[in-house]
Length: 614
Ligand code: M6R
Image (cartoon, rainbow, N blue to C red; front, side, top):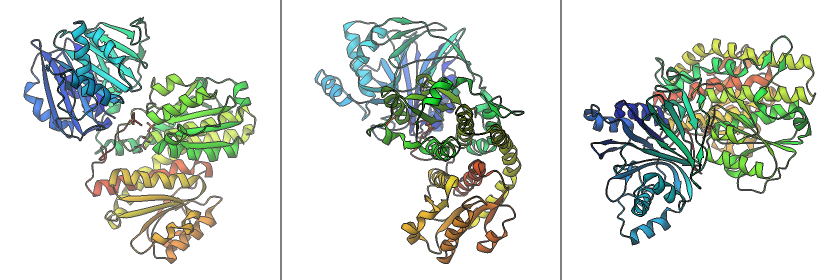
């Protein structure tokens, strides 16, 4: 949801801003803009649409010798995606600029007050009010830091902001409240960014800002203070172990395809060092909850959005089966606004790739207020959720850039399966021999996926010729594969714009079966598992109504090829781990169809990678 980047240092700022924006474009691509300070003036460029449009405008100015500036890539909330609504926004004089990620909730009231004082607004955004408000505060005292602080005490809502003012051209002021912001530090420069990938080409030393903190950056110098009372803070510098090439396409056509192929390694990285292969002992040192606390839990609440919610649905099956604790799964935007029956005996687990998703964050804050212990399964080190939770299980998937989540999902599954084994170990609900068998199978699944990926891609790219023009798709599965049906449908709709729905196979006859005719492709997940015969019956019902079947099933299951020509066979693995394997052809199917339709796979319309607004 919008990416911001800022730089103060000794190098030319424009290439740094453009590189940072390129790495943040997954956060929004409705418009882009940048500003730099030069000769005591602020020079601003903005363009509607993707970053390439901005690059086309600023290219010839790259030689300008400015060492301070801000950039922004927008995911529109207030105001259409036009150049006029693109950031940076200015005050009346054009001498003060603001870039912003978040929503200023009281912007209407503030705008009215400012207009009454004579301020003239030129955009439809909530952000512009910040520029005018700071301008107004500067009238009291010509001090940018004091003016930003004073303005922010009047603002309600979420923000990560960067501010430049021609009156103090060597200073960049940044602040955050409920929107992510990280600082990068180096000997001769300071940076701000919405997310770590923007900093990776320049520095791996970062400082995570917390809510209601602001930073004052100069050329290699900085101070951090509380917005509320101006008190200075000493904050630790963290070293990030990602590198810049991890956020590159590495020869793949799209980030999504690269990330699909990175899944075996991402799973291995997530599992590595956490299972002792000889004994099956599971160790999760960052979990932050002692055995006594875990023993006392009588309920688990899983909270997540989108693909991460699908991971939660699968974890419910695993935990209830192996640990015997009741598990509730909630979409975070529902969880946060309903009456919650969580207490100190509940373990609330947030699942999030980014660790910044606004609804999930709000959900765990509510649960914590009610006394629940909170654990986060997260991919981004130092993200807000990881800092607010009692404990963390990091997925080690590396940066995920494609908007459609792939390797983050399978890594979440690996982490949640590990958690299941860990809970089974602490609560003694899984005997050591079974635990070892399950743990080793989890390690092995990475190798199985690595072996199958190239073949599956070849088969699927041929298969989609018969399907890529379809208007609708259904995905069905039972048990552990029902969430994979949901995930397959989500992947397809978000990147190919084909309408798709996922259903529990047994639920079709309660309504959706009315949709089936010779035009309707139905992807059915039919592994030889404990519900195989039931799922096959549902597939027969679809065939009887002339649905166009694509089946994902177990190698050697010849019955499936009597039902349709389009069968993708997968190796027989332990039933519990089928979701990790069966999600792979679903991802590839969505990818190949979207690519065939000429869709923008990595940056699908209307979406953003990290959803930091409600
Ligand atoms: O960062 P999170 O895991 O919290 O994000 C949750 C969803 O926004 C995300 O999974 C989204 O549904 C993806 N675009 C799905 O591919």
